[in-house]
Image 1 (spheres, rainbow, N blue to C red):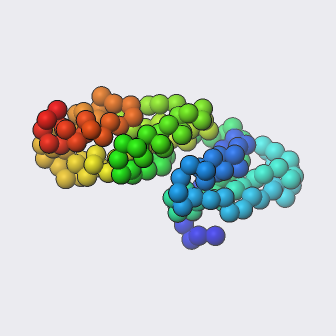
Image 2 (image 1 turned 135 degrees about the horizontal axis):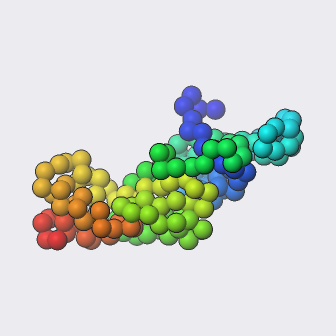
Length: 159
């Protein structure tokens, strides 16, 4: 196990979520599925309790803990993309698999986990600051899924 692992709470679908992530994102895999050694408040002995997986090389553990703690936007995966095709592929996979769209490049998967699908051109503009950052930010605030061409135009001052 990695020294630092992101632990994500699921009701009971950690294995399904991990397998979905592994099918969508490169450098992602399910490494181990661990059954509960005995009964617990949200399940019984033998049910899947934890799942070790990676998302883009980041070590994660899915914990099937029941309904006590719902997901929120306080935690999200930030996936940096290199263009519209990659942005569309990840966004469409998450939303198309029972997820929901949100604003400014954010969406949620069907398990409630939040994802930011952010093209590099947007992140570069925002971190560079100045007028290009302001223009890119203002255009981004009008979007759900990020439109790379519109961000590029805003950075250039053409928007």
